[in-house]
Image 1: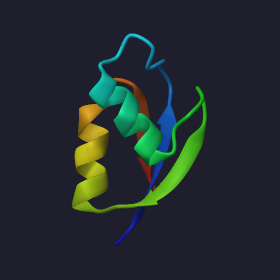
Image 2: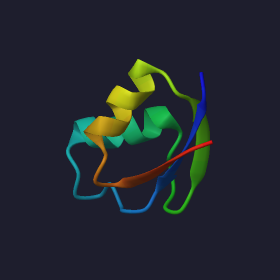
Image 3: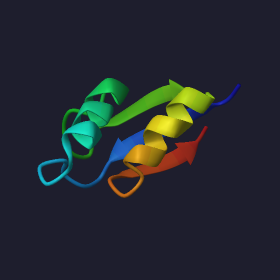
Image 4: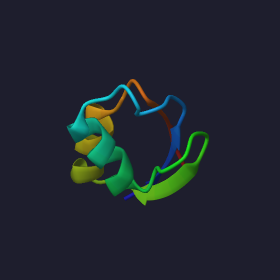
Length: 59
């Protein structure tokens, strides 16, 4: 499978606890931080929960 570059572009301060935990589980702890993860259905589901806070690029 491919890889995804996930970048946190908006703050999680006003988000729900579920959204905050999802961002941390993906490894997104600070704004403008980018992490690379495998493109799996689990990761896609986590991205879907916080899709309004992140930018995703396929590598």
